[in-house]
Length: 191
Image (cartoon, rainbow, N blue to C red; front, side, top):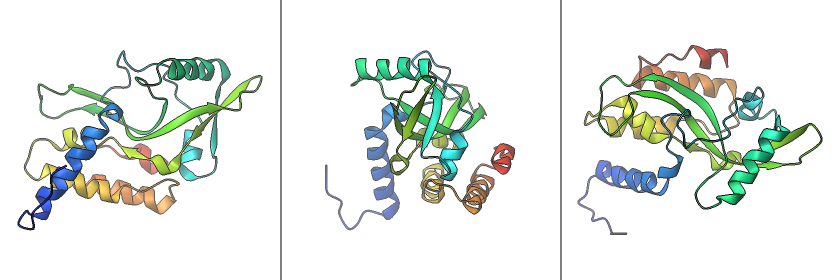
């Protein structure tokens, strides 16, 4: 890692740090959960209870959980079991060659593991302190403008940490209204 001189602007330093973060976390960037590399995708009815702090473990189908756990163990260095939250669904405004046109991506990721397998259920243990933001998707939504990287930094700073309190969800809705007004946040309001 190179040192920073005092003559560098704070914006350049922030962009450098964000680029380092993105380079270290490329494997957690997902633009489309329907992609062939995504395995064992399940939509969980009680995932929201984890986000609000009501549940610390999420009940999941036992067979599906065992299959996901087996794959994660077999390919430990290539694959990761994650819990995804707050889906962003839609199309990018401007076509960009390096990015997909459609987005079906989570805003948040959490490392997860299967535990406490019982006769009919298993549980997904999610570590709330390991919350990660899908920042490349946010950057894609904001476009190529020069101010886009500054906006990404501002949005990242204002995304709440789980467990979400009701007013923090409103803060998130306000952030999207400010920086991505075309984003439909109706489902967040219901949350």
